[in-house]
Image (cartoon, rainbow, N blue to C red; front, side, top):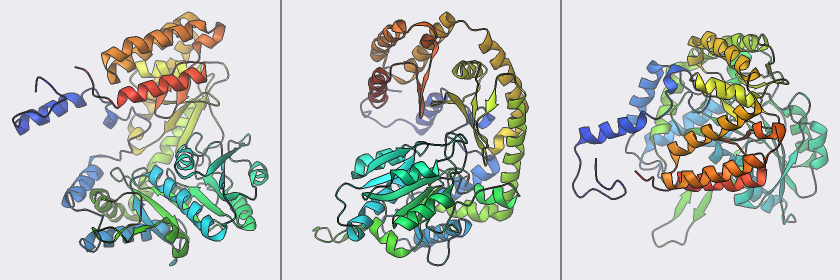
Length: 486
């Protein structure tokens, strides 16, 4: 389109050319509509997508910063929050706000706990929060931002939080405990009732991270599947985060942060009254807030209703049953634990599970890699009902292919895969340096270590040394956020 894509063009480019260039760029993206992606996109079909697009476009230009100017946004947000609270066991006292996603909701929960402690526990100078090792990394981000020390605790053989380990981790500095419903790595709901009872006994706050399960578990339970108690019906639960843009099937980014009462939520707010520009106040992290997700969330909740959500949940859970049974029938593969909804981790005691993932990638499937232990992550969505049989056929073939790989072939494939990924996302000048470092580090590995892959959230590393891995990841992140050479 232009000789220098890193500078503003001197003259405007016709709309058709601009959109054509964007479509060309998009050709490199994963084609998630065909059901071969098992994360990131919660797709429930074109009919629902059309509703979301129309609703978001109706409020394309409005700004959620000032609800007095746009009372429609205020009404829609408060109703989305009220519906969410009702689904999650809240009552007339339950309050909350919409946010840009699960990370912002979690950041606000931790920030609120810190501010609450400053008022109610002023003696605590170095606050701590207790969270199981499976809790989302957004809590680590919140700890880093707000100077709340994270204390990670063990999980049990069922991959749920160890209640006694959590109890033992509490100190006089603890202000918050955390549980997941479910945890993202393994899809199991932590023993929320037992943990919240401990928090209540100790006089501290308890947050439930239901970002992935908040708009799925209530319907799974209504369908008759066993779901542990996890929401505001549990005494001691003081806040819950839940993402509408996951199993609420809303556009991104849309989440809610809910509190048991308004007194607690008050610690979330920010206000500054001495600015020459006037009094400034905001309920969440953002100032300007896009109105499209608010409108789309309101629209999809009303469009689907309980009947629609139950039908989608039934479709997903039927597909989960088929996939679980199919996985267990493949020699060498198994599902870890007893997932409570539609998220599961695939593992193997006899195969390199990452190689199974690589073989699936060669067949066009995209599965996230996890670690501790090595697994492949599967999030089942409505679109997967149509491709479950094909997925299981290819998974059986991938497992068989992984059995035949030698360590030398594994190492070569890791380097080829890394080079391919790097070439897609990094400037060419970075790729050579990256590959040289990876080759040297993998070359130092001995025996079976050469075939290991280390997983990260959102990307897969391929270096066995975690110190080297961290530096390499930071290099990649730096490269991802720089202008690409063309």
